[in-house]
Amino acid sequence: MAAVLPDLDAFLPRPAVRTHHRRTARAAAESLWRAAREVRLSDTRGLSRLVRWRIPGTPPEQTYDQLFRSYPFTLLDEGPCHSVSGLCGRIWTLARDYPRLAGPDEFAGWSEPGTVRVLFAHWARNGPDGTAELCSEARVQPVDRAAAVRLRAIWAVLGRFEPLVASEPLAVAVRRASAVSA
Image (cartoon, rainbow, N blue to C red; front, side, top):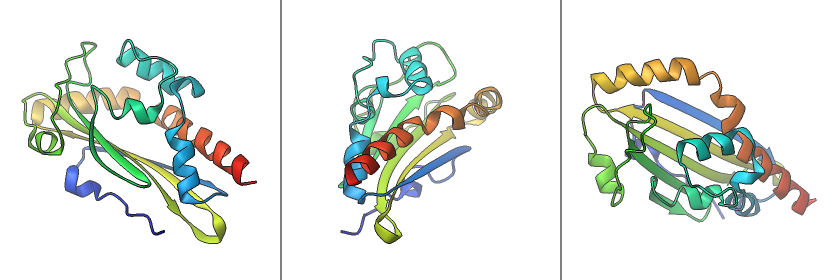
């Protein structure tokens, strides 16, 4: 089965910040995707702490898949081996002032001054020689100049740590899918 990959430009075409991580496993994309959907916050260290600090009350046994399907996130698109979620708001504050979005149209039309739109996409696709690749991409787009200034300031501080924690769930999923396929 050929994976249908999400068109992220349709959701957020001009991000000010874009990150991308990928890991390869000796497994089929479907098996890798299944393993990815089962990774729990408690399976990771740094990212789990960061998520639970920014979203108080998030249980450690919750999967990342469940996380991206519940408030403050909104599921924007999904397929057999992908999901795309978004959130909007002031990501640089300690207050949890994220609006509840009804779906993709509300995400696309979001224009509250001083805020950003954030997109999180995850997918698995088959590669050569019985391998599969698990990918994760995040995009952040400010809605105005004030939000752009704040985003640049916070990214200057936090951006250097992003690679250390953002790929943790991918590594767990790859390890599990590879072990099952071995």
